[in-house]
Amino acid sequence: MSILLVEMYPSQATSHIGDSHGVIVCAEDADEAIALLRHDSFDLVLINMAALPDDGFDLIRRMRRAGDDTPIVALTRAGPDDGVAARALGANAALADAVDPAALHACICANLRRAVDGGRPMLRLGDLSLCLTTRDASFRQASLNLTAGEYSILELMVVRKGLVLTRTSFLNHLFSAREKPDGRIIDVLMCKLRKKLERAGAGRLISIVWGRGYMISELDALRQRVSDTVTVANHGLVG
Figure 1 (cartoon, rainbow, N blue to C red):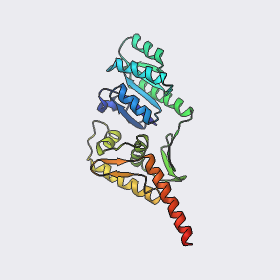
Figure 2: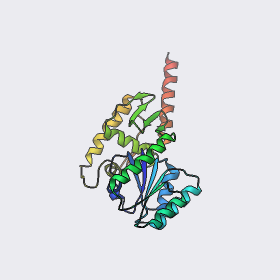
Figure 3: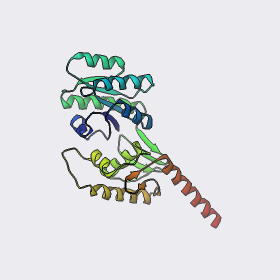
Figure 4: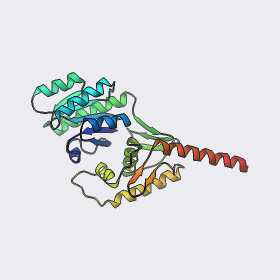
């Protein structure tokens, strides 16, 4: 699953939704959220309107006017007015920012199930497929047998394809603000992930952007296919 969290303080994301809902991508305002929505597909948008009410209403309005039917859950200030206004603009649910975490968890799960039932349970990039419900990854229908950490890294990269992701990006995604793991754990997980992709024949999918981080793009998937096609053709010529 992938959630777009629109929150003034992205480092506090886990205080709202924890780490049990898959990929969490953060935006600090409506403009950044719209840019991400144009680039990627999300299963749910969670807006902390208690912190940025004007941007929250603007984001809901712009999404619905553009025909974007991604489920929206709005966290509003105390009192019914903001919740009523958010739903009137197109939010699927509106809860007070101080709502019990269990109620928020149930609301998110209900809307994520509707997103899956609506036919978006898979992420695909070229011959790479990720099942968002089982959290399994495969390349040309062969399972990659990834660990939870390896899958989370790969899923985040596919969701944010075309963007360079740094060590910090992965750390923020994998760990809560209270945890402070050594950043080298990302290098270890990435090394293992790339080896598994290489063994599956997908060694060209992840690009290293030296001094910055890692990236997956549509171009990487195209290069993989072109490389495989050339290899097959060369084998045919040799034979």
